[in-house]
Image 1 (cartoon, rainbow, N blue to C red):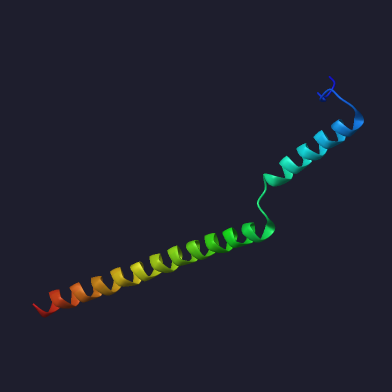
Image 2: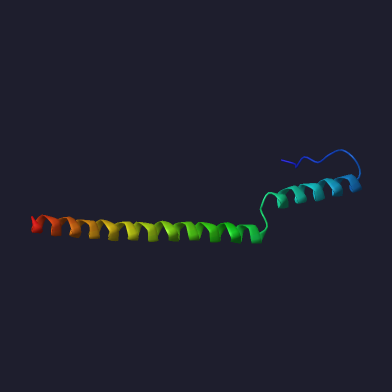
Length: 73
């Protein structure tokens, strides 16, 4: 099966190919934007894990506190 090419001369076909290449290149964000996005996601995961750990420690402390209050009664 033959690739579709626009009607016209070689210059038009070359320009069409360049436009297609440019359109495909524009679909992917620049490397610095991808790096910033990955850094943001890593920080988000880190803060979620730290928050979960702190929540676990808080629950543990609260459980100990409740047990101490029960022992005093």
